[in-house]
Image (tube, rainbow, N blue to C red):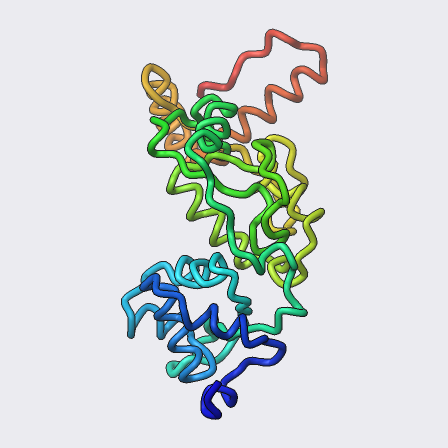
Length: 259
């Protein structure tokens, strides 16, 4: 190894890991790696403004999926904002399961995961054609790494929109740094049907989509909410609360307020 290369070796990196990083040719991952080797870090502004990568988290994920340890931290931007920055990490501080990179899913495995969910996105519960659903780890790869054996119940099919929402929420969660899988297990993004929090916040969420013949119900709810001068989400919660209270009082045939 040349002397100039040795100066740039991140703490804890072996010669093999350095060679692995330099051998990566995938454009987005290579862009990130080359920039960090040159400047010591790369910011979200660099990724967006210099390289045109709108979804910065995807670019960083590309690097991690190649088995290259990388960590995030916060820095001030040129206009006074606080933004994300990324640098190479010491492998000793990373979860062992993330260092080998992600495993490739077979077509059959993807089918098994998607069909086990009834061709539905696990978050919004809408049915999609198989090609429009993406496979994602229930517990983020960056938290627990890749399991030794792939099991369908450790993955979930997501539509593109929900996958992006999950990525953003997870990457801004306090547990992204703490990396405690048990916290993720009870999160909405891993267990939407039985969650206890959303990104560690004491929140509950229910995804409701009106489609086809039920759209008229949504339209009616919108009209009533507008008359009451409340948001439709607040009105739906009012209706549900009213119904639940009627059940508690023993009135199983309670009528919903339509005024």
